Length: 242
Ligand code: ADE
Image (tube, rainbow, N blue to C red; front, side, top):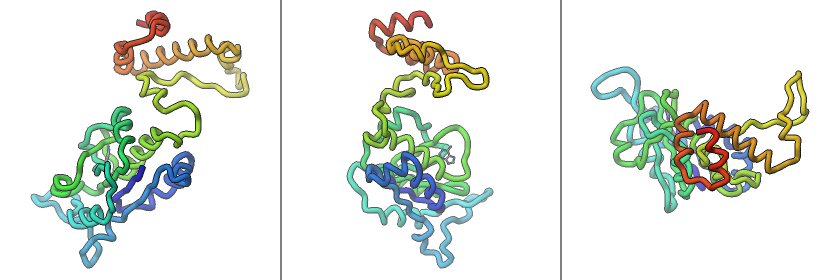
């Protein structure tokens, strides 16, 4: 998967793309992350990328020309999509992450100031995407959220055996609590069952914890989970919580 980021602040991505799981995925060439400095494509003698909004109002608007030319500088692969990070877009969720992970190239456009000239969006953007109902100072953090969540869906990015598809939001259940050594610290102990070695009972306990946490914290998710088809054994456990 190739991620291309159109941004005025490529330096924001350095730590992100060199560290931890994303850093390893880049090193292994499972993903590629390229930043493109929009300002490099400005034809203005002062390398300006923005201008005052027609109609007046506070702030500046990113102009079409540098964005268009930065985008056109990319040698696109097939199965590619241009996404503008914006609070006006549909909110990112697990289903969208899975959908995006099937593409070969994601071009993420990061806006700043009061936004981007609508004509750039109309002509070149396939989709607008938000990461939540709040406004960031720019699209860069949002783009990193997209890259991080989409990358985890790609086989061989996560270095454990559990597929990302078996996790929390894929299952519509939140994660059960986890514990590690020591078995007691500051008077707080690990639930007995986890040290029993009885894997069947442990799986059952974890499942019930997931149900309880989801039901209390995210009744909306629990409702969705309840209405999915379940195996008989699961249904028996689930019934206790309906
Ligand atoms: N840019 C500014 N705020 C944003 C948000 N919530 N999601 C995506 N991009 C943004």
